Length: 238
Image 1 (cartoon, rainbow, N blue to C red):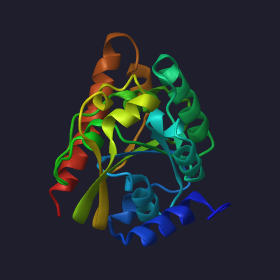
Image 2 (image 1 turned 135 degrees about the horizontal axis):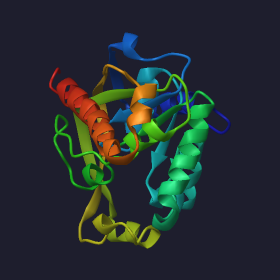
Image 3 (image 1 turned 120 degrees about the horizontal axis):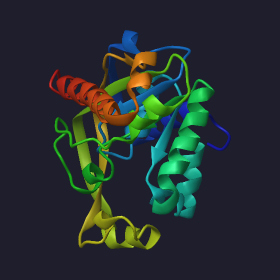
Image 4 (image 1 turned 135 degrees about the vertical axis):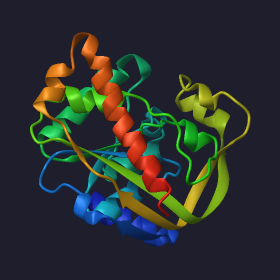
């Protein structure tokens, strides 16, 4: 699969895993513009599932440890992902890389629940609290015609394996407290998944102007709330 595009690689990976995808509301997906894709997250297949369902390459921010494991790092780079840096440089590096991608009219994918649902198994229709990074990126990035697209992944049929002890991952990223415990990292494999695009939110000049001083927190909270509400509603549709 060397030299193949992230979109083609995603489709081949899903075919190899035997994953069937059913896409809903494709008319809501913005075209020919910069997009921040925000989605719930339970499986390592979520990135290729979203690419295949939205029919576009998506540059996903992924966990720091994925960039530290040689073979895994090679694979995620071919998939178009960019691993987050170590904690002391993570925020600055994330904003810099993501902004450059958005300025070139690409899709940037973010899983704002973070690592928690990957380590602790949850029901396919559940969703955890969001981190604020994606909202700050949307309001801070100097990109015109920027859309934030909430998307829900609903697994209808899956299997779960436990291939890696959590403490092994702490060797690659000792800063992640979730890895510093007994037990095994679950690997969720979808056999069938529905992908539902939500209503995109276009970032306005008014929002950016309000993103300062005491108003900034309110604007960020509103953007997070829109995406959380949208995805929660989509998770209950099927």
